Every structure is written in structure tokens, then in C-alpha cells.
Image (tube, rainbow, N blue to C red; front, side, top):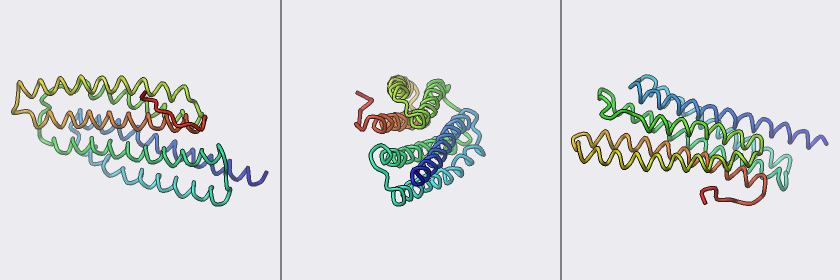
Length: 219
């Protein structure tokens, strides 16, 4: 009984750090899109600076989970909870890197006027932000319904990104002198689309945790 209590307490701490990581990523994405829209260089620099704390949180997850495995020797679903936490922390860290990449685009655009109104990018980001929140909730609540919902939202983001590609390529044909910035906007779209993919990965990890089977939510 004492060992079980120790495991449950350790698992609660692990979940708390994952919740913190999710909040960090969600905020980083918000700030990255805001600084792109407002050309706020200081905010972009802050997003870049804050990325180091996300890396530290991922290291904490690895340390805490490893300690639980060594001291508590969990099996079956309990072991899956820790293994999945490792995978989720890796996905969240990569999502943070992608938010940082968006902020770096703002830094590259310093002094330039936005050549084409940012419409698809903020819309995609709002969907993906909700996916991030749902991803963490799906793990914490072991809710597979949320996991499958994210797959549908990811399809929406993919469709929007495809439309964005077509739109910006047509723009570049019409205005080749603006191709450089148009390509940067495409990069931002790609970064957001990839964040959505990582959120979907978390959904797949949740399904694995609950069922013991590895699904492909994109099928």
C-alpha cells in the first residue's frame, strides 16, 4: 500500500509538469502569432528566450519518470503511464521549438511591411492551440474521445495549409518580387501544421495508454 501511494504521488507530480509544459507551449504559440501580427521584436525575442525553460521541464519529466520506474517497478498500465509521459514531453518540447521558429520568422521580417494580410495563419493557430489544450486534457483524463477529436481537427488544419500553399504560390506568380516573404509565411504555416501533428501524436499516445494498442489517428 505504501509503495502504491508513493507511485500515485510521483505520477501526480509527473502530470503536473506535463500540464505546465502544455501551458508553456500554448502560451508560446499565442505569443509567436501575436508578435508576427504586430511585428513585436521584443516579444519574439522573449519567445526565443523562454524556450530554454521548456527544455528543462522535459528533462524533469525524464528524471521523475526514471526514478519512478527504478523505485516503484510499475507494470502494465502503470508503466505505460510513464512511457507515454516520456513521449508526450518529447512532443511538447518539439512543439515549443516550432513556436520558437515562428518567432524567429518575426525577427527575420524586422523592418518589413507584411505583403499579404495574415488570415489563414491566425485561424490555423487558434485551432492548433485548442488541440494543444485537448491533447493535455486527453492524457490527464485518459479520454480517448478527445484524442479522436484531435485527429479531425488536424485534418482541418491540413486542409487550411493546403489552401494557404495554393494561395501564396499564386501570389508569388503575380508578384515575384515578394516571393521571399511569401515563402516565410509558408514556413509559418508549415510550423503550425507540424504543431498540430504533434498534438495528434499525443492523442495517439493517450489511446495507447488506455487500450495498450498503438493507433494511427490519421487513418
